[in-house]
Image (cartoon, rainbow, N blue to C red; front, side, top):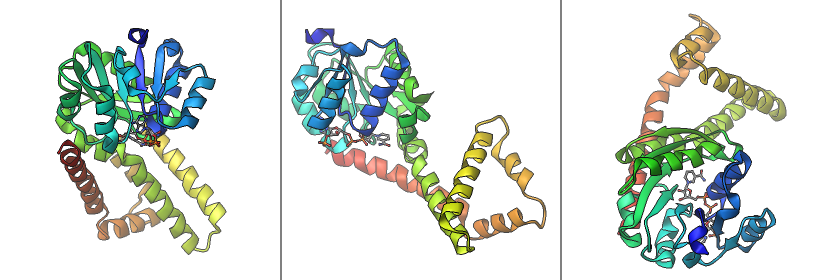
Length: 270
Ligand SMILES: NC(=O)c1ccc[n+]([C@@H]2O[C@H](COP(=O)([O-])OP(=O)(O)OC[C@H]3O[C@@H](n4cnc5c(N)ncnc54)[C@H](OP(=O)(O)O)[C@@H]3O)[C@@H](O)[C@H]2O)c1
């Protein structure tokens, strides 16, 4: 019976849940042969209401053809203990930040073929971007299958595993940089006497339009040049941002997140 499970999703919170929703919406995936392993009774019952079997028992996922690990990295040891050494060749896909394929495979054993992935929160609205990297034991077919699943929640980019720390810093954590910018921008607008509701509309609308332009063919530098006339208002704003070290701040942010990923990896692996 358990050998018929095409995919076991372990942890169906924000990310696991977004991927499950994506697969359901995409159609064509045998969702009735997905098993959700989840600690939260509320999430289990929500899955069951949509016809997805759900259990708390990790051992039920041991014989699945594919396993998607979507718990917090700190929970991995407990999950691996519950799964034990995998009894047959299994594609193990991980969305866990800062946890190497070596660390994932160690407790799961030789049968685990690990593919690492790094999605981001816009996956919730099928507008994510996910980096996929082959880990230990992964075949080309494993990568293709993983990409097919993650493509249901947005774009997919293939990278090398050693690039995953930087990728996590760039696109995994990336949405938070935009949210921080949005907060600061709205606050700055209210400082000019604009009421908060109007400030929010102006900033959100500008972001929406600008990101649509960024998604096109033109490079960001020429897009910026097109709104920056010499001696004008945009030029004054950009000069103030540059004088306050905007680029250095961005660089340091990405460096700090990359470093933290490496630290997390060694903390969880030890
Ligand atoms: N959210 C993001 O933007 C994002 C982006 C990229 C990657 N990721 C990665 O995605 C992973 C999950 O993050 P998340 O935000 O989706 O976390 P989350 O919302 O907390 O989801 C994890 C789920 O797994 C459950 N769980 C924990 N231990 C379990 C166990 N032993 N057996 C079964 N279920 C268990 C949790 O239940 P409890 O709540 O009861 O613990 C929770 O419902 C993390 O490793 C993170 O690095 C997240």
